[in-house]
Amino acid sequence: RKDLWLAAALFEKEHGKRESLEGLLQKAVENCPKAENLWLMAAKSKWLGGDVTGARAILAQAFGQNPNSEEIWLAAVKLESENREYERARKILSKACNLAPTARVYMKSAKLEWQLNELNRALE
Image 1 (spheres, rainbow, N blue to C red):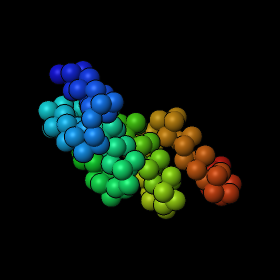
Image 2 (image 1 turned 90 degrees about the vertical axis):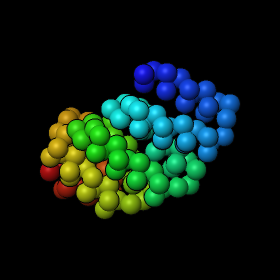
Image 3 (image 1 turned 120 degrees about the vertical axis):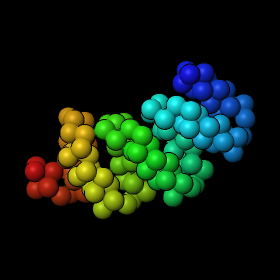
Image 4 (image 1 turned 45 degrees about the vertical axis):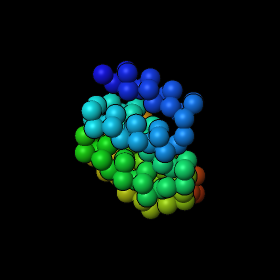
């Protein structure tokens, strides 16, 4: 059950080490592949540990299990934009606009362009 995996992950996050948390989260997503929050925790743990490539790999796996997840799309965009990989963020947002077209995705796309001072693209 995903709620038990989440409780275990939160406990490990508070009282354990990052490596043990990541191991637990790997098992959790294998057992609960539709639990978006577990995927997001796993990717964030990798990212905060300095492993951006690992975080990307986890998000790629998460897309395979949850292809239309707005939260996963936006997490991938945040990962790229926070790491100043703006072209990657744009590509992800473009795909998201086609595959998971929600108001938040469109707003994030416009906001990214605005922050990059690409006002014409933001208006599009």
